[in-house]
Length: 233
Image 1 (cartoon, one colour):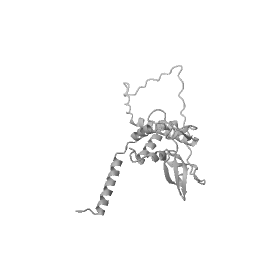
Image 2: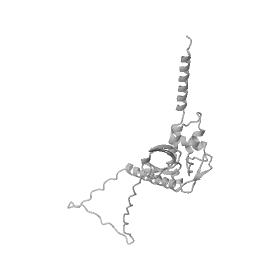
Image 3: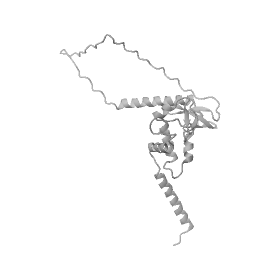
Image 4: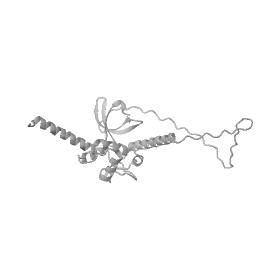
């Protein structure tokens, strides 16, 4: 039986879908492996150990522009890998005011501003605090001390020895509560620096589009976020 044009068209579409699915299946999904691929392809920009280098703002678009179907990573896995890379302790530690950002070739790509450096150090401190709390939760509970009682049934406590050079215990200092974050009420302009509430702390961004109550901003890593004005601080 002779095939119709519709049959041939359907088979061609099926082959195209199958090829695309096969191509996606071959892509690297693990974020750490994606980071290792980036470090191998752009060694002047990325690394997997040692000191990290601050990345150029908009690095995601620079990498995405060089990706092709033959590359083992997709834009989705690239975005996830960049998020993991820029939130690591060694990367946050390198984001210091006045340090040079680098592009894919390792060339200078702008100095780090004070606000970006402050945000990175805040993220680093919060991340280390959470890690310490998690270690504390996973630590085995201490065994209770043996109950030492005298013949009369009363507990006896050995007096604590105090040496001649012993110093009095230091008073506990309590840090003042941080001030509440006030919403942004000024006039928005394209290209201005602004902070957006994402998670526990505001993220420094750049305004790229304003439409009514909605605002499109870009993060330090080049990610584009659409949000409402009420989320700006």
